[in-house]
Image 1 (cartoon, rainbow, N blue to C red):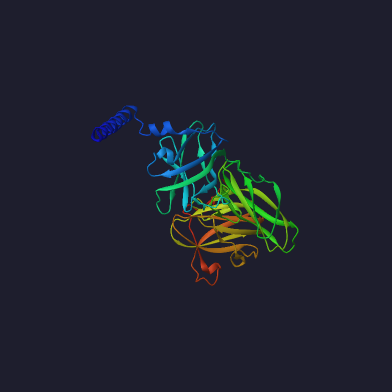
Image 2 (image 1 turned 135 degrees about the vertical axis):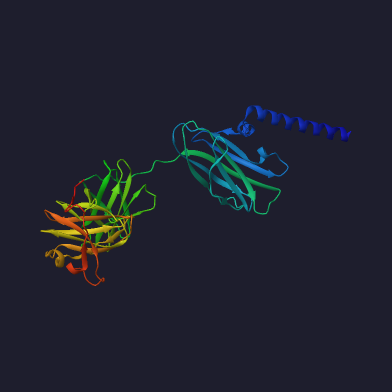
Length: 386
């Protein structure tokens, strides 16, 4: 009798397996059964779960599988809360797309058996409208026990929209209140691609302190780009301008401004003529030590940035020995072939000639005897304003 029963069970199992194989083959969806047993859940709905893990029980009795279809393109928070588990039992959540490929794993939360203890696990996933996803919840014990109990609540909610800071525009001044050791951001969206300069200064609250632009980043949480306020930015992109106050003992008010900077280039010439502040883009043809100096009837300032936007030199020596004007600048940089440097010239002048030459000195001086003119090849060529 027992043999007949076992034979009957074996035949039933074989039939079921063959039936499933045929179904999968003709249906073409290996996850068909999982999709059938998944429980639909809506945004804002909370499901209370209570599971008793037993290795003998079917998987569907030990775990939970939900199906969610978002009504709009958005980020959604998947949250397990009010967790109550046997000791050393961990709940795990997996969010998967319609092909059961994993989106993200929430971090595990261990909660001991004391009913007063509770915890939560959450993860955030960006989803497209009407794109079905699946959420699996299960638990495991640290000692691989055959039996344990776990309970929790599961819910889905649309992630709150990120609160954006005040926006700054070109030729506008924005005031910020800053505490000691505090950094605040402003949102900037350029109308056109180009160079922009951000400046900050303390206007009240701390006469001895000063303010500065720490960095300009794409996105609030992205790694900061090195800058002291001068950046090449792309039209229509959202940037965060981060401002800090230094050497203040209490809250101070800072004023932040933005202006667009024109560009020039040597374009094979050794000299560029400027009539106002500008960024000169210089790409080195070969490795070498280069002198950059000005000849003007005004008071120009200079800061040279490397290829990563880091201020390379902004402590310019006086260029008086070269130009005869003690307000002119003269700096030396070690240029690498193919690297592009940005020479930001500002200050008070009506006309300024910026000249590049080979530096032949020993590093102790910078005068007429320490430089060698770079020939243009076609006489005197002046870079044109872009």
